[in-house]
Amino acid sequence: MSFDPILYSHVAKEEDYPDKTVIIEEGSTGYWIFVVLEGKVRVTQKTPQGAVTIDTLKEGDVFGEMAFFERGRGMRTASVIADGPVRLGLLDTDQLDKDYEALSPQLKELITTLIIRLKETTRQASTLSAEKSLRR
Amino acid sequence: MNKGKEKIPPIVRLHYKKGDLIVKEGDYGISIYKIIDGRVGVFTQAGDQDISLATLGQGEIIGEMVFLYGDTEPRSASVRALEASEIEVWHPARLSREYDQIPGTLKYIIDQTLGHLLRINKVFGLLRAREKAERDSAPPSEPLTSQRRFYRKEIDMLCRYRPAGTSSEKSLIGRIKDLSRGGLALSVENSNVEKCSHIPGDKFSINTELPTDKKLDLTAEIVAIRQDQSDKNVLLGMNITHLTEHDMKNLGFFLMP
Image (cartoon, helix red, strand yellow):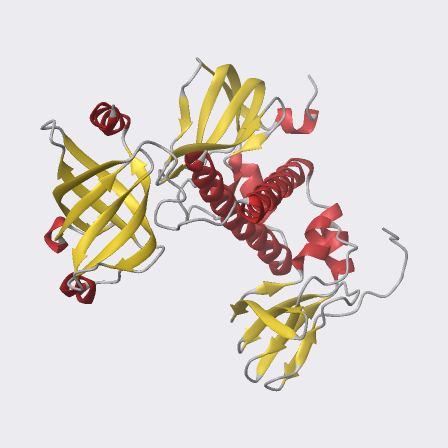
């Protein structure tokens, strides 16, 4: 497998999903962090013009981490949908929680800033992309 | 990073007076700033004009790019204190050292998040560049119809409309004067204009019934405004921004020559 063995050691359980399964629903709450073990997923966001795909993730890619870093305060900001059959790993967040809490306040704030920037830019990009596709 | 005994500057707090420059565009700086108290303005210079980009306040962070992206570019914007402000200055070396020591899995996840941000930044940059290119190359034309390349049908149809996102109790009455796949001309009485905003960029939800007895619900955005000859009405040139597939089919049938 092409991804980090340390990461794999944190996989609490593995799950298989058929094509088009909605793994994360935008607007819902959840705390799991996922890693793609096999296959691909699409990340989509709702816009007034309909859902747009903002990214495609493959083996070794992690998703769902934004809600984790928001420490359960936020909602899922995008949907994640199986693009073909996928096998996902759900990460053990107990150890990650401990590791995160041990960070200095400055580093935590930097990670929070990173999440805010990611949210803002993703929203801007999906809005622009939806408006463009409408005009075409 | 050199893990020798070089001294890492401690976290310091600095006080700025109103108007003081905190970060200068074009400078090579590596510090990260956190606003403890006060308000600062982020701006960039275009010619001899300052273009305001953002106003930041308590708890917000500036200059994180250096750290997050390992950015070696000069500062992309200036920051000025808008009032007496207290700012905490972090040296990235301290954070880099700690970052390097984060346990493997957590670090992998943070790196992934960074990767997502870099990717989406690139996508956004490309989208914006492409949009600017399209806008620059679009030929100037009659604003009421320019963006409506499809077949237009002249009609006179009553409709109810309201600012998008508001409840139907706010509905106003208008008349659709022509209709195409891409947009419509909506005639409204001057008195409506006084009830809520009717300016370019405003979006309205519009409900009407086609002469084919099919209901039509859509959302459209004002792109141009013209006073009607009668002087009692305003004609709004609108682009359709949302139409369900079902409604699009009904509209298509209606528009067929």
